[in-house]
Image 1: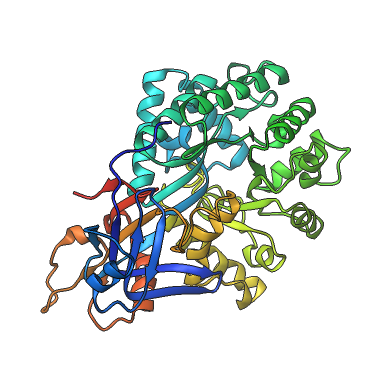
Image 2: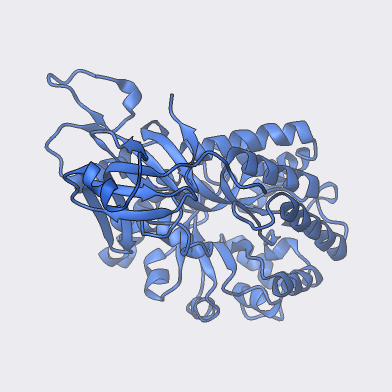
Length: 459
C-alpha cells in the first residue's frame, strides 16, 4: 500500500467529546486538536481562547483549519466489531425466523450468490459506503466462503479508506453442499489466499487486516477448527466467530461436540480462545465460560439489535463487564437491521433495561457506557487501543463531525437536513449528547476521517 498523499497539518477546532473510561465522557466545549501530516494527533488543547496562540505555541505554520458546527462536536469514529458485509442486502429481512432457519432461508443463498464479482462489488461498495456515512471508521467484516469475494471486499475497503478486518468464512460442515468448503484443508488454503492478497495490497496492515473466521462451531469440523487454531498460532492474526447466540444453537453444539464441557471449551480446546479472539453475541454464557473467557482474555462483541430481531435473547453485558471481560458493539448486519453503531449503542442501552426488569437496576447501561463500548471498548476488542478510540495524543485521527439541529425561534422546522435531533437551546452538553444517542442518525454525521483522511462528507 502506498502512503496516502495530500495530508497537511490540520487543527480541528470547537467542541469535542470522547470516552476517557467506561463511566466517563469528556466534553470539551472549546478545544483544539492538532493532527499532523501522518494523520496522528499531535496535540490536544482545552479551554481555548486564542486559536492563533495555540497554533504558534506548537510551532505550526498555516495549518488547515476545520471547525465544528456551532451546535455540534467532534467524536471518535465508531468501531463495529461484528458485521457481515455479504448480508447487507438482507438488512431488515428476517421475518419470524430464528437463527438456524434464518441462515438456511436468507443467509446462505445470498452469500452464495456473491461468487459473482459484479454483484459482490455492488453489495460490498454499498455496505462500506453506508457504514462510513454512519460514522464507522473501523469494521470487522465477515465476507463469504469464496476467497475471490473476500479479496474483493478487502479491495473495496482499501479504496474507500475504511479501516477493516476482513474474514473469509470457514465452514466445512452443516451447510448446504452448494455453499461450504469441500474439506478442512481447502478451507485453510483459501484462507491463506486471502491473507496473501491482503499482504499484497496493504503489507503493513495500516488499513486492512486479515482475520481468521471459523463461522461458528456447528459449521466447522474438529479438523478445521484444529487447523485454524494452528494457523492462528502461526500467523498471530486475530480471529472472529460466534458463541452462545440462542438456545437451539447451544443444543446443537452439545450434540456435535459432546466431549467438551461447553461452547467456549470447544474453541479453547482447538487453540482459538485467545486474546486475539472476538466472540459475537455471548447471550447464554455460563459463569464457568465467563471465567474461561476472562482467563484467556478473549473479547466479546455485543450485538443487541440482532439478538432482539432474531429473538435470540438478552446478553447480560453488565455481568460481563463486572467480570472484567472486554466488550464492544456490533451491528451484526443482517441479523441486525441497521449498519449504524449509534443504533447499536441505543439498542444496547434498551436491551440492558429489559435485563434490568428481572435482574435489577444495576444491569442498566448509561449513555457514557454505550458510547465507550462503541469506540474505546471496540478498539480494545479489535486490538487497536494503541491506535484509535479516543482523542489522546499519539493516536490516529479516526473521527466524525456531528451536527445537531437548532430549533429556530417560533418552533418552525428550520433545516430538516440537520437530522432528527432538535436542540432548543436550554440543554446542557450532557443532554445534547444524550439526545444524539437516542435520536440521532447518519444525517447528523457531517464528515468522517480515517487516519486523517476525509472518507465521507455530507453534501
